[in-house]
Length: 142
Image (tube, rainbow, N blue to C red):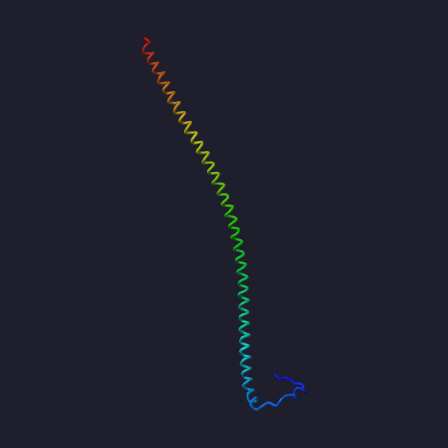
């Protein structure tokens, strides 16, 4: 790359020593190597930047998936809560029904005992009546 110096600057230029002139190719090579290094760094930075963008896109996708899972988890918790409440209500209803059945069964057993007692009383009365009839029949001439 060449630069056109204004004339006034050319007049001010100091004479260059022979050693400085001899060092120019070395300095040029060094500058070219440094430039190549900077270009490599720039390419690496561009590759890193592309990788970071890809990672960022993946993070956004992962975050969206996480939000969806969190929404599903919240819905599951809500459904579990509803199901738990239904189970509690059914359990309470079954307990009430069982209590009613137990009470009815208890009443049935009491009624059964009363009926058994009545049956025994009637049987005793019948046995007594039969005994009286038999005694009267024996006393009566035929």
